[in-house]
Length: 247
Image (cartoon, rainbow, N blue to C red; front, side, top):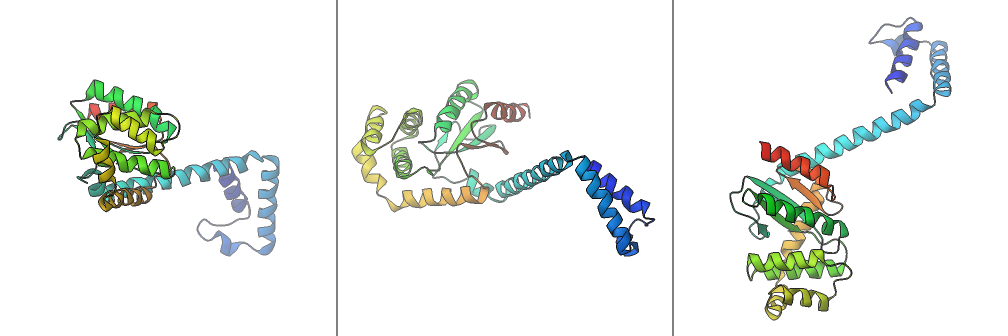
């Protein structure tokens, strides 16, 4: 892209133009000559098309990322201060990590190993906020409703149930959800009754809306002390965490 711009500028200069008003001074014949120079250069160096496309993609990604960070700043209250969200770790922790997750997402299963390792190593310094973000069908939605209902029975019970479901491979039909809830210490009957509350669906709907505003198109999606990490990218997660710990 830089080489092409240089060739174009040189071609215009060859036509005797002054910077700033080149197009006004070019005759139709001169414009044809410039086009011929540029065309010949592209034909001789077709790789510049690929370079231009790569640069356009880089700029588009940069704009998307900036938009995402702007959205995180604008939505900070909903991201960090919704009292309905499950929280794992101490209040007032040095570092807050937010995770948008889906119980049927295999990448969330991978990322949960990282979450558990971080909690074991830095548990006193870090709090995780879990954003129940079911986007993979009705099983996902039912699992999230069950998890939020189980939270009413205590954070420890929620955590055990959450880990059991996110670690479980395969489908999550009602029977499987009940089984995982039972072994996690959840009162299943009480959970099922609480799941019918419209407030739970309202909560999930608002998290979904928040995710759409932030551009969360897949799970997991992390915000590590303000740094966005999309996917189960353990290297990027570790780097963001180490920067946060150092600060």
